[in-house]
Image (cartoon, rainbow, N blue to C red; front, top):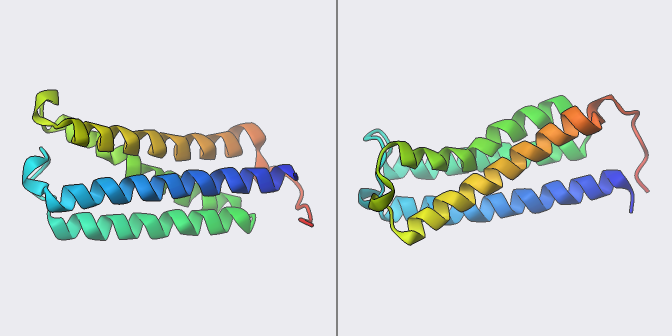
Length: 139
């Protein structure tokens, strides 16, 4: 398999994992908002809107990556990685004992998939340097 296609497949898998993980956590946060320690400005509508906006940015990043528009793709993917990474912010607003096992699981999963998206983006841009490679024809 062509390395370019492998990288696109890996990003697609990471993106799908992040979309699923954040959808589960954001939905739980939406319905059980009073149980999550977080700042007062976070409301159910802000949770819903943030997830939609971030997900659109992530999908756009994948599309740009696949279209070999790497700089814009990297920008979108770094922004999207915070959809998962920002979930770790819950820990700034409450002690570990204030969270249920379910909440810890959702928060940690989001953090891991967000870190994976960020890691992929840094790997692609700084290690593989795909943005500098000549355009290859995909058969």
